[in-house]
Structure formats: structure tokens, C-alpha cells
Length: 266
Image (cartoon, rainbow, N blue to C red; front, top):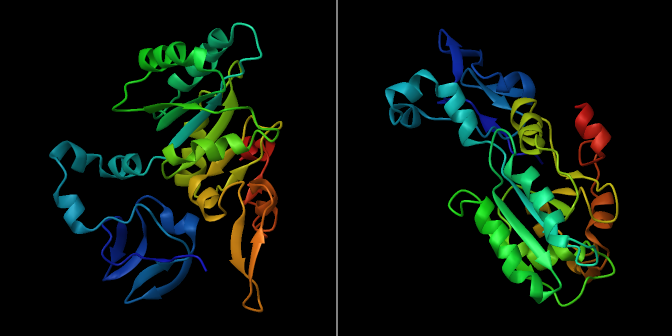
């Protein structure tokens, strides 16, 4: 069941004779109106730009004039990046710098955090130097994660890093891979402007290019075994990898699990 939003009391609700007639930032048109209550809309889905009068009163004069943009800026999509350092490649650090450069130069908003993963301790100092040189830790958190070996299924790398994850989305890539510098902007456009759902974008190979919702990854216990109760009340376990678990959660909106072609087309 989708959480709904009651528009009564929201400063962006447009009114006429105590009845709502629309939304200043067009959320009612994009989320859909389920019902009306006391003359105000009840939206079919959760609206993250509902703002009460108290919020409006707290704004500076300049922000008040640009209140629509201020609200949209407050909810801009947060994306973190996991970068696997491929130490089997020559010039691994130089290739890492290529990928990091694309992350640094994201349009619209900085990366929420960056995690570099390595299986070789001898690269630690150079990795830390790259991270410190490129990111202000107050704006983009950065972490180095050491793994004992590269797992056969590289998706398990995400589980090793997940303790550093924040609410939002994670994008996975490898040193030397290019990252779309408009990725964060495109995610935000889809989620906060077009108001389309976004859970998973499939990777373009066995690891690179996976974009996932962190709450969903946590809900399914990532690539690890997930306990659940059967219809008979018995305890059972799902030991499939994360992407296989997701296949069972696809809905008829065709928005749960999409490809990059579908993402970019939107």
C-alpha cells in the first residue's frame, strides 16, 4: 500500500473559496489525486515537498521569494558511489582518478559519499590521497574499504561497503570506468521532477552500472540470506543474490527494475 499525502496545510496548495484547485509545483498532477478531504487533495503517493506554514515563516526574504526552488533543493536526490579498484590492471591508481573525476564533476549536486574498495593493502595510501585531494569530507563523505579477496560474485562488494551507505541510491563502478557526469541530475529529474519511481537500474555487466535504492537493499538483506515467514507461519530463508530477489518484487508499473536504456529514455 502506497503512503498517501494530505495537502491540507501545505503552503504550495492553491485554493479558491477554501477548496484546493491545484499545486504550485504541480505535484498533484504528477502524483495523482486519490480523493478530497475537507476540500483538499489526498494524493495517491507520498509527497516530499509538503511544507507547513511554519516552514515558510522560517525562510529568509530571499528564500521566500524562491520558495519553490528552496523546497526542491531540500529534497534533491542523494547518490553515493562504490568504486572497486581493479588491482589486476596496470596503472590502477591512474584509472581510479579517471572515474573519480567523473564523480567529482557531477552536475546539480555533489556525490553524497564515495567508497573505494581494494583487495591490496599496498594501495591504501594512494587511494586515501586521491580521496582527500578530490573531496571535501564535509560535503562528500569518503571511505576506503579493504576486502580480503575479490568475491566470485562482485555484487557482494556492496554488502562489504553497506555500513557506510546513506539513505538514497548507490551507484557501482570500477576504476577506469566512465560515469555519466549528469547521473545525479538525471536521478533527481526522474524522482523529484517527473515523479517517477526509481528502485533499481540494472548493471551493464556483472558489477558496473548498478543503481540501487539503499532502503530496498537493506530490506532484502542485500546479497545475504533473508529470513521470512511463509504462509503457513513457518520460518524460511531466501539465499538468492539481491537482483534475483528483486525479480520477484517487480510490479506492473514497469518501474521497479529497469535498464539504462529505459532510464535514459525517460
